[in-house]
Image (tube, rainbow, N blue to C red; front, side):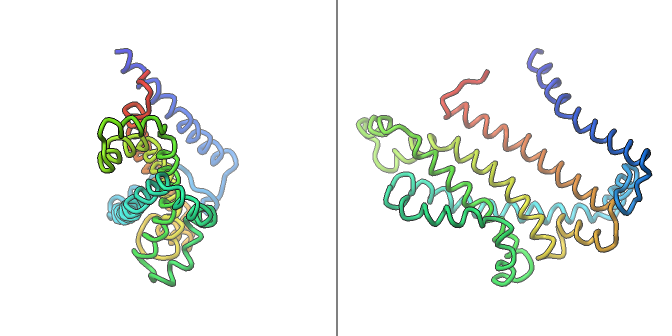
Length: 260
């Protein structure tokens, strides 16, 4: 019962600022008589959303965007985690690659859009490449931090108990680095989502970013705002219902902390 009350209170405190924003939005529209081409009313946005649901266009855009994020993120994780582990275990590899990572980390994400379109053309390949770059450097760096944070006495103790290279990797190194890896994935997905929207405005003809860009050409501010709301809701759902619980569970399992 106490746990249920705590969850309800947390949900209420989370929703309260959003509700306040809606009230402020409606008051501004009514008091200042804002032109719909400048910023739409809540009713206009709701109507635009209802129309996109009826014609099915919103589902096409959402599915395309989520598919690109999933593929780009998965590819980045498959490459970045082994590389981060290698950097964490081998000082020579770390010293050699660290300058490159410092250089390219500031270029990750949307800075790659122009050259990505030249390499892969307009479409799935270019956008996936942008997402890959947005996630890759963050996850690699967090994996490196996770591996480096594992105490050497713990590794030596496992080795003295007979753990070979593979057992040490799977039973000590990866579990010990997993909290940092999950945190890196959570952070990287946030960057990936931003890069996705920017790339879809330029490099495709379907997706939430494209929906915003197309609506701008026809001065459909209600569609733009609706698209922004959909983007925010999708990220909140992914972050609060998937990533945050996964990160919390991982830290409680392998991060040497207990559930409060």
